[in-house]
Image 1 (cartoon, rainbow, N blue to C red):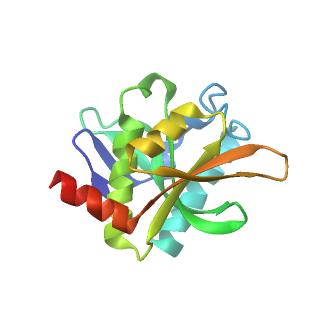
Image 2 (cartoon, rainbow, N blue to C red):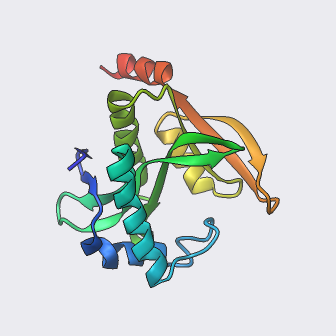
Length: 177
């Protein structure tokens, strides 16, 4: 286990999580803001790539597990992403469609934010998403981010960039503790 919340456990994903992650990443509705949904091969590569990230960086996207049932409902974690032409630490999240709207993505993202500021030297964390992805924008704001910019990629897709700094996180902690 990497971290936990009141309802969730975040842990390293394994090949045994294939079926659960396939249900999230292969769902075309669930992945409508992503460049594509995944087939079996892409899901297996997704898991392998995150296992490699754990080995190299000590972090990656982690399996999001419901404490109550032990069921994997998605992933959330920290990765290094190309955002507006620069490599930056980014919190990403994918939650199974039937589990959305219950605050799981926000809860998991807050846990990843806290883990990141406690365990890495990063002074700012980002989340970025397609301009039209309102649910992901709300999740970023729910974990404390503010809109810091927008950019277009090579395919002329517009993206919003949200961020929270270590100082802003520390202030949040002072307010709530």
